[in-house]
Structures are given as C-alpha cells and as structure tokens.
Image (cartoon, rainbow, N blue to C red):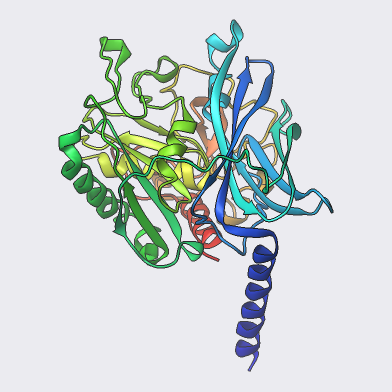
Length: 423
C-alpha cells in the first residue's frame, strides 16, 4: 500500500507540474538572440532579436534548474508577479575566449542565443554571469511580449530524419545532429555518420542502459566545400557553419563562433542538445555546457570516444580532467570551487564527491598503481598539474586512448542529467 501511495503522489505531482507548464507556456520555442561582447576584464550583452521556432522538446515538469552549473544563468520570470517560471545554466565560447592572451589586448563580440518555452504572457528574461568569486551577477534584462508582431517567424526549412526514436520529446533527451562540411553529394555519408554516432554513443555506460530515454535526429544542410577550415595549414573552406580548427590557437580545438547560425539549423527539429558532425578525419572537436558540441566524424578508431568525451561537457557540465592541451589559462582560480561536478580545488569539497569516497581515503590521494581503480582525489586536472583535483586516475574525461569508462563521479552526474531531462 505504501508503494502505491508513493506512485500516486508522484503521478499527482507530475500532473500538477505539467499543468504549471500549460498555464504559462505553449509547446513551441522562443529564441532570444544577442551579442556577447567584452574583453578579459568585462562583458556586456546586447539584444539582437526574438525568433519563434516550432518545437519545444524540453521537460514540461523540470522547469527550474537547481544545479546552477555554467558560467551564465538564465531566469524567466512572470512580468506581472516576478515568479520564476523557467531557468537554465549554460556556458559560452566567449567565456573561454576571455581567458586567452588576445582578450587582454582587444575587445570582441560573439553572436549567441538562448531558448525558452514560448510564454503566453509577458516575461522578464535575465542573464547573470559569474564574477571573479564565482557568484552570479545580473548582466542582462529584457522584457518579452509574446504578442509582439516583431517576433520573427520565417525560417529556412531543412530535411530532418530520425536516427533513434524512443518517444515524445517532452520525456526524452533529444539530440539533434547537424551536418558540417558535407557537400551536396554527401548526404548519404552524413546519414551513415549519424547512424554511426548513435551506434558508438550507446556503447558507453550510462548511455547504454538508458537508450530508451533518448531521441536522436539529423538535420541535413549541404556545404559548398568539404571539411572545416584549418588555418594553421592555410586551408579555408566554404562550409555551412564555418567551423574551424585552431580555435584560440589550439590546433585540435574545432569550434564555431556563430552560435546563432547553429540555432538556425537546429531549430528544424525538436532538440535539447546540439551536436555537430564535421566531415573530416583530423582529430579534434570541442563542446561547451548547454551550448553545442562538435567533433570529427571520421577520425579512425576514436570517433565514438571523441563524441562521448565532448558530450560529457555539453550534457553534464563535466570538466576536462587532463593536464595541458590548451593555449589559455586562469580557468580555475585556486580560491574558487569549480562548478563542474568532477573537478575540485578542495575549497568546498564537501559539495562534490566527498560523500562517495571509501572510508579512510587519503586526501589528496597518491597517484599510485594500486589506486588505479580507486575513487579518490587525484591532483592534476582542468589543464593544470597543481591545485585542481579529479576523482580517479583515469576516466573518459581524461584519457581517451587508454580508458573506455567514466569514473563513478562522472557516471553519476550523467545519470542525474538524464533523469532531469526525462521527468
């Protein structure tokens, strides 16, 4: 009887939350485009435009983000009552650019975008950014009138196809795969690469045991040239999304600056997360939390591992656990606890995986062979050898070449995000 009572309570709670969504939102997307500008010391947000997109794939019950991951945090409040109706944390490529040497000497703007369920009445959209102490400070405020005739509705319609279909978008994790650097004659190749993405993706736990909680769709748009730009080798190609290696002068960092262009393409399908398949065999890729991910579709033997690693950043906010490999610094100040769930500076370690450690675990934990499979606190991570710690000696967020599993901390974080999206 107690079990039935719990089930009944859960169903009633879910119905109430769904009613809350229907009260305030429609099942389509409002997109707010803006420009993220500044230098290493400051940033500003400048409004661009509002766009209506036809689908809303997100949860209709988990509307409030209580994790507070990311460098930015968006809140949507009722303009009438001030009640928070929807919130999400996210990061951007601009945040990373701010840590580069270039940002110390010049200012720059990045086209960015955020999405929310389409409101029925006026709402206030705010964006907050972390200050140097890691505290969110409001930087942008905009009132949205959903009845405004200035909300754009025209869009380019592109072919969409199912790769994996498990159910209705509102109760699934919806991934959209975008084609980048595939020419007109390579549509068949892109469709096959989407199939291979799904095949490789579900080989890794905890995705393998949660396959029924995912939808994967592909959006096809050809490019005039094949493959991304490679500036270091003077290779410049005309591609749909203008992807490029050598982002921030890091050879293997393959990224796209125009996130609004990425949204234009992705909006043809219901989606929670955007992943871009680049038509190249050159090792590389990248991903930013709740932003987008991209990687080489044809890198021999390791394409699936690259997908899995980068999706860990995009989906669960996991940080890189390796040392070196980037040209920028000052990412993890020693006196601030990283927001990423798998990294710590020990400032507030009690908020991380401390409760998961076996009794008597030495902190920091020595990186010895006998500890290879042991959960601990190992120094080295977040690109630096000192002051940042990771949960296990090796993990898919550290070394793609010699490991095939996520550590328990990363696996737990991924599972929690799956559950959040599917309820």
